[in-house]
Length: 467
Image (cartoon, rainbow, N blue to C red; front, side):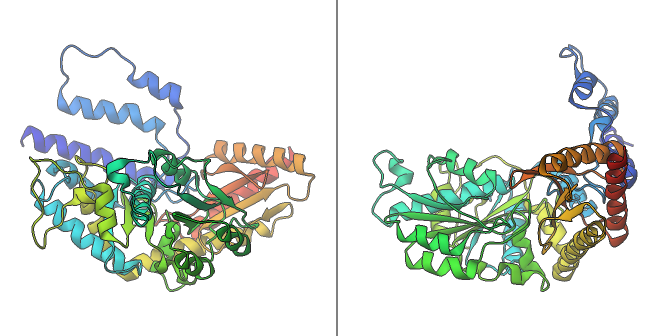
């Protein structure tokens, strides 16, 4: 056997051992300091054998790895990195393709073209839209809003791509109070400012108040970008696209939707009512490494106006080949030239699951989330603070206690849950109160796993309360 074959087989063996143990894994046994100590050494003068390097990497890293690939990880909106996607990603690394250009990597560009078409079909978005394969929703939001910035200024005679923003007409950004932090970061990166926005009040679930939004809209003149949300990060709530988008379009606004996980509601008949009207927007940002279960990093920037998308993103140089008729250059849709060929894992997951399999996966996650909520709500002192319409839960522990005591009990219960290690879940602030936050986004989280999760939370709550 060749050295390369032995190396790759050992890496695959270590990966398989890790994944097979994932359902039984607990919290990392190493924190940052302990993990750092495992790798802290001077730069070696001499090299190390290939197999030894891989084994030492595995030995040093595994104690500091979370069980994000297991069925009871609910800490953040993180998908399970499905084995098919991981295997495709293995090949992506082995092939070593730079997906920055259709001539440098013809297969990578071609697969992106097909995967993009499939995504638009699956998510019920306009077929003429363009898709950029980016690192995740953060860069997807950035990419879409870059296209928006250029287009709304172009409509008033200003070329922001050539002239920048110095002396440009002012852009108003309308956004909900409970928008995700990554959208504000994207606005910051684009020179639009994370505080220089017109924030609109939201309701108890985090949805934009349509009446307040229309009132704010009446006060706006000139170039306008509106940012809506599909899936609030705590509650999973959706803005009312049917009410909000038409008056925005009448005003000439560019409407962007941050749908990091919520956009996938479009892929299931049981959840698509939540996102009704979303297809009328101008751009959409979402992740593959959440509900599509691709490995990290993988996200999609989707823009209805392909020309606006390409104007904002195209990187040109004399040494870079031009795209001919019928060809798609991946670098025209993302803020990167050299980059990973993310289309391979996306194509593999779409091919493996198919339309029906993705709908089944989404339905299972949502059903498991509702089951956890139902079981917890039966326990005195535990309250579910959101309508579990999708996959997110906001849980108050000690709901029958005064606010400060409930905060303390919630924090201590979260500490107990994490110490017990049956599941991983974390806390958040919601409406100024401490809460336990669960996100059910893993293809392995069945009803049985949901029951184990609920039992673990109840046991930890009772232990803390009685202790």
